[in-house]
Length: 140
Image (cartoon, rainbow, N blue to C red; front, side, top):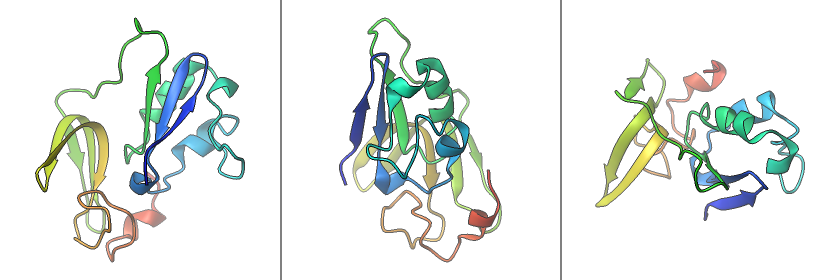
């Protein structure tokens, strides 16, 4: 699936369904902007751009990204040093400014949920379909 873009006056939201693990941080935090029962499900003008950016930075999978429409506004950046969190039965939760190299492709990312069990259909990203999905029962 291609990345979908949702344009607002102050912010553009990008969404990659293939990377979404349905942590639902977005819909729980600002449902007026993110509502999966509505089409389009993202309405960038229904909230404040800074609040939307803050919520997107909390998306653990990196399925959501943003860009302010003001060219002078800061770009989304990951922190340094990057961190990797994990526990038994969980994917690798990556946050920070990272380079992910897989099958000859390099992606610069700020957040990603990487597969540990090898069963994902979206390598190297976790798609929550493998046997290591115990984490789905414990919100992050």
